[in-house]
Length: 115
Image 1 (cartoon, one colour):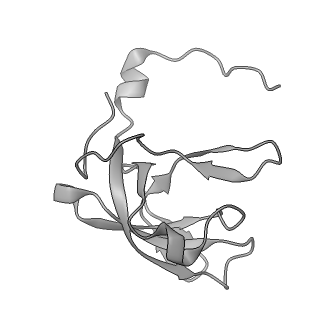
Image 2: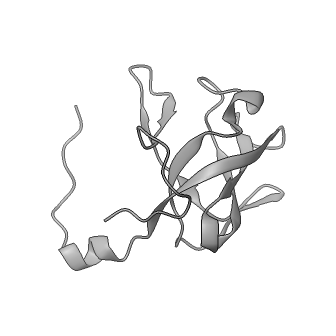
């Protein structure tokens, strides 16, 4: 079990923009150092944003389209090999340390903000 991180101010948490979106496209990412999938997520009024996700253990390219995910949308873009990742899709590790995506338990409007 890992220890909790040090406490932060609520104002620090308020800086993080966490939204829900729907995956509208996914592709293999063979150039990535670790197995990954390129995904495009529709965040409603924020538009479609790209992300690289190391989620190949539990998800297939075909099975991702239409799935809603939770993501941080206000981190600076990050170059991952030849791909520019614009958002960070959130997940937690399973018992083997493989990523399981976070998602709402019912369909909600794209762009909905965590509060």
